Image 1 (tube, rainbow, N blue to C red):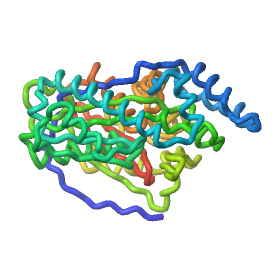
Image 2: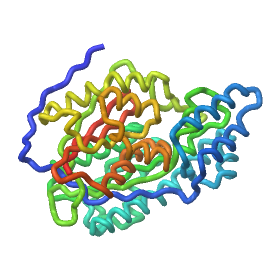
Image 3: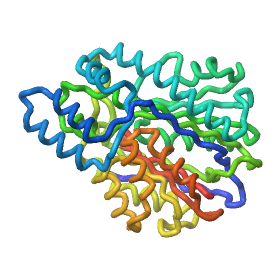
Image 4: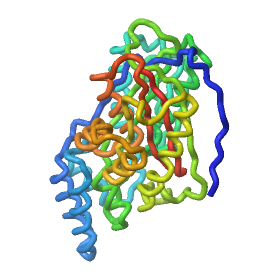
Length: 369
């Protein structure tokens, strides 16, 4: 398997778009991992005792302390007992719109931006389907301008937050006077399938949670934009890995594909992608002051640490996010970035957003604080 990259010259004197605000929103139903494990394993098929034991073991070692769910637990358990994608998707849409509005409203308020000042609205999700898409419905609901540009992103999975930041960067480089908003919404609990005893579903049942995050960014630096600069972006697609991570979509709705090779691929290719990207800017991993890494799970985080030779504390923010929220798919890196914004490193410090997703892909965004 060969990988090729195209060299690109970047101007270090050119300032990129700057993040002005980030706001997260979560459903009100939050449960301890032990409670979720007990509830989910109690309803596993009786003939799969071995899988039930394995589920308890996997979920106790997931590094997750609690997660938010889109419904009260009893209602959620009743819903996932049925393979009714129509009902699941209706609940997904209602909840996604509510959380999306909460997160965008909070981010706009923090940035001091009126909805009428938004020039472009991006949305990323992989846990439900809507046509018109989420950002179109929210543009109507929230009173955005009729000429607001709407850019829906679907299919990037856990890498969606990084992909969204990258496309936000690209748009604002082309339109430096504009204000752009990115929304990520993932309601992973609504995709869980009670009757699926596959290892992938067992792992997913112990990792994934629900939530949303919104980012407001300016194309040029202006007062009120205290966040990091989005300096550059990088995508790394690994051939022959389409079945490693993603969805098997059918009449049942979404069935997770999560191969055991994910940590191995992460360990092999994340350093190659990171070195290729950082070399463009004359940087090495040892110079990165903030690592904004997707909370894919303990094995994935260990693979990233070992592959890049990171110090033990480098992924603390990611582990805090994983423990408090679980794996939020595309929202995870934004939740980690939100935590970094509360105690940023010194100005000028480089940071790296890294997330892995279907494809198998590695998506990265270089930041400067």
